[in-house]
Length: 471
Length: 106
Image (cartoon, rainbow over all chains, first blue to last red; front, top):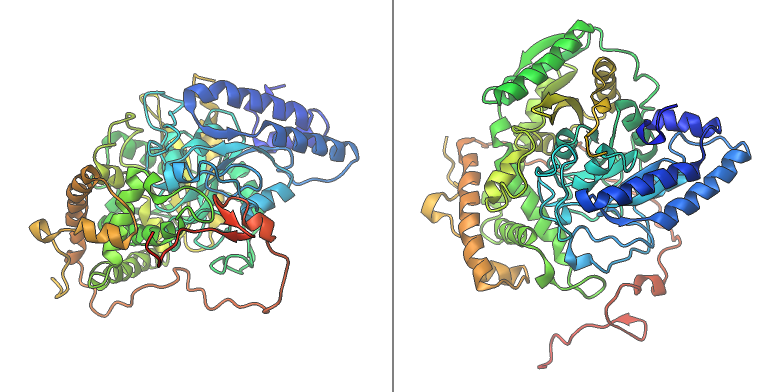
C-alpha cells in the first residue's frame, strides 16, 4: 500500500470507508507533516491539532457503526485564514485581526464540517488577500515547496502550499483576481475559481465584493470536483449567491472531450514566454488527440483587464476595509500593512466626489465589454485554454518594491473575475524544475465541463505525482 | 477615440494624499505619504490606458451574472447572542460596545 500521505482524496476515502485506515491515523500523519514542514514553508498561521483529532475520533466511531459518509469525511482540509471559523483565530493575514476569534463559521466551512472534514489548520495569505506572491502576510512570507527561494503565488499562498507539500488533501481559497489560480499554477496543484455566485461568500472576510469567488485547491481534478459538490449552492445569508441548483460535478467527469470545441485566444499567447507557450500548446495538442476540436479565437479587451481591475478592486477594498475600526473587534487602522493602505487610498480616491464617473463608472463599462468578449467567444467554443501566469514562480523579494509590476502578475487571471466566468487551473508541466499551469475557462456555471476537460488531460500526464523534493 | 471625461495622465495624475487619507480615516506617516504618492502616480498612469476605449453608449455592468432581486420571508430566526456579539470587543460597558467620545472635547 502507498504511504497514506501520498493518496488522493478519492483513494483515501475508499480506504477509510472500507476500514483499511483510521481517520485518527490519517489526522496524525497529516498534522505531523504539517508541523514538520511549517518552519520551512510557513504555510499555516494556525495548526488545529485538537479540533482535527476530535473530529477524526468522532468519525472513526461513525465508520465503525457502519454510517455512510460523504467522500470528504475525515479528509484533512486547510482553510485560508480569511474564512471565519468558529472558535479558531482568523487573522486575514493582518495584525489588525491578530486577536480575532469568530463566533460563527463561514457557510463553506459549515458545509465542509457537515461533510465531516477534519480542519487541519488556517493557512497563510497575503494580508486581506491583497497580493500575488504571499509576501504581504503580516505573519511572514510562505515559500514555494519546489524552490524555497521562490514565491508560491498569492494570495491563497498557504492553501496551495499545504496541498502541494502534502500537509492537507484539500484547501479552501478565495480568488478575486487570480488568488487561487496563480498559486495553484506556481505549486503544481489544481485550483478552481467557480462562477461568481456559485459558492457562498458568507463569513469570508470581503475583499472586493463584486469580484470575490470562493474556491479551493486539491492534487487532482477529481478531488477538486468532490469539494465543489459540497461547497456549491444557494445560501440565504449571501444574496449574491445564485439560487440555480449546482450540478453533481463528478458524475460526468469521465465523459471525455470528444467533439468539444476548445478556443485558443490569441491575445494570451502573442507576447508569452516561449517555454510557457510551448507547454500549454503541448497540452492543447494532447486534448486534440483525445478528440477535441481546436479553434483560434480573440478576446480583444484582454489588455485592459489589469487597468479595469485596479479601479474596481481598490474601490471596493476601500469600502470593505472601512469597517475595521477597532471598536467591535480587532485593532485600530494604524495596524494595516502598506499594501492595504495603498489600496484604501487608491480606492477612496477613485470613489471620491468628482472622480467616481471618471474611474469607477468607466471601469464598470469596460467590464461589460470584457464580459461581452467572453459571451461572444462562447458562442463559438465550449471552453477556452490560456496560461495562468506570464512568468515562472519569481524570487522572494523580487517584486516587493514595485506594486505595479506585482499587479501585472495577474494579467491573465483578472479577466475571468471581471467577466464572472469560471476557470480551472490545472498543472501542465515543469520548466527548470518549476511548475507551470494552464487555465480552462468556460461560460457561466460550466464547472462540470471544465472538470471533464481537466480530468481527460490529467489522465495522460499525472503531474501531481511529481512531488517537491522537500517532502 | 478619446472621451471628454478622460482619465488623467502623466503630471496631471495626482492624489491629494492628505485629503484622501482623511476621507478614509487612515492615518499615514510622512514617509508613507511620499512613497504612496509616487507609487500611486505610476498606477494611475497605467490605469489611464482605459482612455483608449470608446465606451459611449455602453451600459455599466451591475451584478455580473444578471441576478435579479433576491427576497425572502421577513421572519425571525436565531442569531448571535449579545454575549457572542461582544466577545471580541476591546472595550464594553453594560452590554454595549464602548467608544471614545466623538462630540465632546476630550
